[in-house]
Image (cartoon, rainbow, N blue to C red; front, side, top):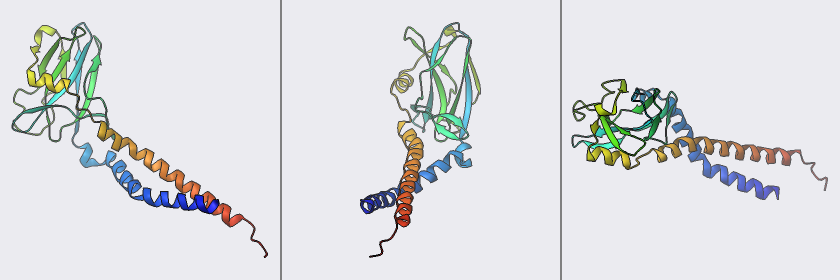
Length: 204
């Protein structure tokens, strides 16, 4: 019975080893200076007297394609966020947003009100120029809804089509699970190995 379990554990460890190595490399990437150098932040302050929901939009390429920004929970370690839009900001409060500006220019803020009306604040009027850079401004204040513009169709579409970073998060946080499973398998294998060695040998 012990030999069967030992063989199963050994096969599992061998099969999981490449994924464990990859997981370690990806986990190291969260503190990779080359990764973190592209992370920047800006703040949205809500002074319009009502709760708003904001979705940061970026522009990619000379064609000006619109996407939601790749948002991160932290800049060090660089942990991606599953949520990339619909950030709730109550009246009188502010929200700091961290994102990766590599391959995308932050260009608009889509603002949704409680009655589901949409507006936009332009962060970069010419986002296809000087690609790719950190935001032109690091602080945006929503003082009055009347100061905002009607949301453009392509910007609205980008805000409504959830881009998200689910795959990135699965890869990022799945690393920890794989490493933990690998550690547990090794621990169980060593326990069986020690149990076998400690068994008294038969004299016959």
